[in-house]
Length: 134
Image (tube, rainbow, N blue to C red; front, top):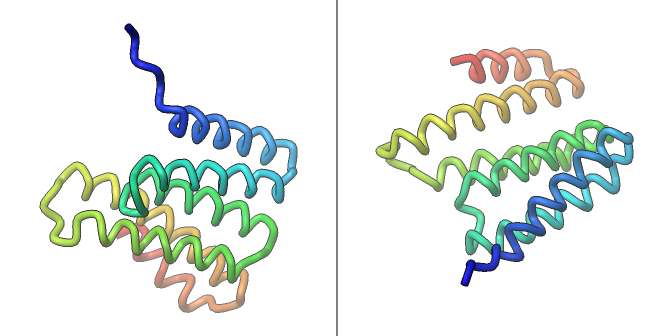
């Protein structure tokens, strides 16, 4: 007998797909709801936050919140991304995790820089942009 696909994984993928469609239709609020549904499934799959899938979902939600100009809420999502990445491999021994997390962190720092720029804090924005490129 062929193994049945994990329903949570399938649902998570469908919610993410639907979020993309809704985002393209500029239905940002509905897209956020779909990403949160996907996040809930991924939390179930991974048994908690310490996985790059979770960080990716936080990034998606954070970007959507930025598009709604909900900057404080977006900051919270991006802060969570950094927390997840730091907990995954705190000693930096796993090269695969480290390389992937660097990409996630660079994107997150860039998003944080955009928020700080929108808030008028050009000094913090510049520092974050520079850090994202390091």
